[in-house]
Image (tube, rainbow, N blue to C red):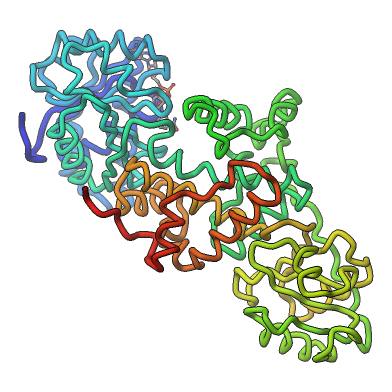
Length: 506
Ligand SMILES: NC(=O)c1ccc[n+]([C@@H]2O[C@H](COP(=O)([O-])OP(=O)(O)OC[C@H]3O[C@@H](n4cnc5c(N)ncnc54)[C@H](O)[C@@H]3O)[C@@H](O)[C@H]2O)c1
């Protein structure tokens, strides 16, 4: 078997959305590409499409006319599957159906040379089930690209239980030679990227389910305070809730009903009602002429004159909060007893528990999320009994310098704390289970999910011990095993080590 990434002949079966992108990628990397589709004329259309994409690259000055002509000469539409016989690698991107894929792999195996590699672009099937249809399962692997393939610069190389290590190496070398980051992952549900991406949805939905905040609040906080490109509800509306609901249910079932991935009961009634998102005109948001209609922001109340504020001196941002209060014209007091508004900054603790722990009057307490810097969107959490006038005074005070404010109900951990603790916990569990190396996990999440940081490095940045505290508080408050902290996370926090520290080798 060849072990370099030199020019080779690559077959692509299935000339739809993914097949076209995969053909373009390898063609641009200098390989010969043969494209086949069961639908008559589909392969020729795909060739036309790829040719058009290359012509656009020439127009934009990203490719020379000579390179375009040369690439065009290396691309061939094949009416018969038999024309793929000379390929050293065939990538399958047909319909997501196990029997269809197994049939195709059986036919391909009879055609290609003994040392040719067969790869599937499946996003949800177990690669071993496809490989099991072959006489030589060692040559079968997953090669999972993301849409649009040329722009999503990462691919998962899925090592099924019987995939030969040389096949994994060869696929990695080919993928990297085409300019994409190849990450190696075990043949586990959701592989690496869809697995790591679960936490954003499960915890976002749980926050809404618990009546802590609205979908728009969750999206706003995660986008503006943490730097996500989109919040979970915006993403669900983009993908389509009907599609996402199937993925959520499938990953949960494939993980033997692991509570961390339990789908939300909020979803099935919304799917039944046709609230799919953008494509149906209404999802978590309404759409008019393709434009998302955002709910009106809660108006900023007037700041009461002569407001007396006490800030818990134990708060990590106590100085900043006092400075904000004074800049807005409020008085800051050193004794809680005489203050109108008591500000706390608990970590992984609900506002009611924090008020009781400090012996404060819960009706006058409001908690401020210490996680994002105070300069970004500010999240205020009420106790179960915060008086409306106290809530409004806190909102007015924290918004006085023009910063946006989100007001949420009581919860152990604010929106950002809960979502980040969940994402980091799932990532730690991926590392613990050896589904991927730490380096591959970190890059895959940045490139595949577009998060501003890899999840373990992000956990270190925010404070792994504090995120562990959020999980423990959630577990204690709800008894829900979805919040049990991963052993990887607990050990590294106990040792005071970065979460990215690999496990010792046995
Ligand atoms: N669309 C995505 O965002 C995405 C992302 C990653 C992975 N995937 C996976 O990639 C695969 C293809 O998805 P897609 O979105 O490109 O689908 P698609 O419907 O756009 O294209 C599939 C193509 O396969 C052809 N086809 C079906 N059965 C065939 C067969 N037996 N032999 C030859 N051709 C056949 C169809 O005619 C069609 O042209 C699926 O396994 C899917 O799960 C899709």
